[in-house]
Length: 339
Image (cartoon, rainbow, N blue to C red):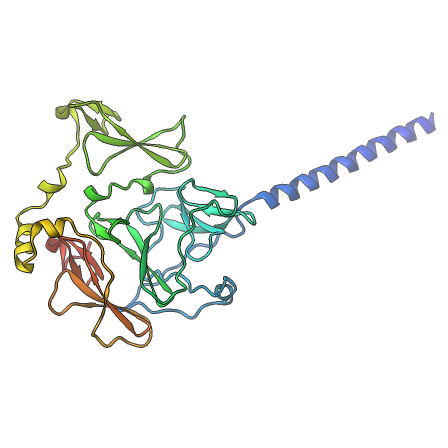
């Protein structure tokens, strides 16, 4: 009898030990699959007149010697809905999670890379990674999923910029533009909106158009002829019942826009068919360090941009003027006024 009980007790103890080992292995496996290695909030400091470049930290030097993104007083997740993932400038393995206006730094499991379009970590080579700023030449690119932000690259330093007054960044012209010409809604589409919880987003260019957000991807939809999309019912309705207040891009340009064209003595047709051109070198004497913006002496629609002692003349989109107060192009009626 004692022998039987002893054998039974040994079997039970052995099973308990085996169960503990399985639980420990499962816990370790779960932690290793967690894509987030850090949840470090991004801190920004308000600049003075110019944007200062802080010395890179040890972690910065480890990331292929890329210069860190210069934020200035901007917030990565401003005007972005919760649970949208943003790309990390300079490292395709990293990304940010927007939560309550804060950017939380995360990382894909190695060697996967973050793809902003699909809002997921994908196999190496399949992600649409952001460009890097290693070269000395000037370039700009959209900061994906934000609609209003973009990155200026010059002499290896990436600088985050944000369009003002509800303007959106137009990747076709590399400038801030009227929302009717861009119609970006990616900042409003979280991956957590799915077939069971769709989000309807009105178009910024047409009352007949709207977007369905599912799995982080906005899909354009069009109402039947004669109907407008209404946010009251998230449906297409007769125009009198719709709350759409959009006007056509041509009608949004009031008399002040015509006055601008006359002042600048530039034909309206050429201005409206504007194509981006390479910026010209600036004649201003740029400070040897930091990033700086200066008003152009003769053109309200242009400005001087200096980085690390090197300067360029950058142009605004047609109909916009440079405002030194916010260091960005704006509608002339808003120049000199804070948001």
